[in-house]
Length: 237
Image (cartoon, rainbow, N blue to C red; front, side, top):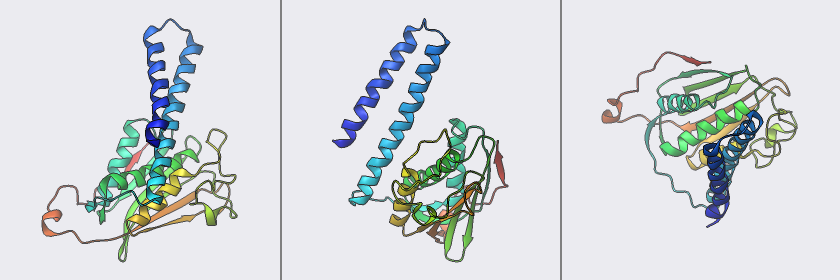
């Protein structure tokens, strides 16, 4: 019920903007205004979705549908989707992903990766670099997302994964006050039996986030599926 009450007004606004687009006859200023409305409504819709997911995780209402997943392939696919929808903006994204297998809910795993990269984009100026790595460390499969952005002040770092703990870590263009992406990442990773770590030398020095998940060995039939062989590094500019 709450989700319906929150999303319904957004749908009405989007429909109204679409009607204005069809009517046409407006100048460039009006076109830019409608574009800004669409952009902000999309962002607001995503925030609403994250808030609802956080509420569901906190109340224990999310049930994972886990299966063996090639983490390297999943990460590459998530980056490709972000690139194809224009969400990488002017950032250079470098991906190196080894074939690592985990037991995970594919949909939630995509959400974890997308939120990590979206967070890096939000706090990295245009033209900055985001590096995404997938590798194994002992019994863990590790996803590392490192950016060249604004960094995290030392006083904020210990609570950087907590809800609403953003501190001064923002760009002029970035939404201030919320840290929903990282809070949801932490909760979803913990549901998978994993953990999240955050590192930063300090303000203006970039940030690095590690997602550590229990590593599994693929069964014989899973190992024969396509996509488990390590592919060469990919750079998306």
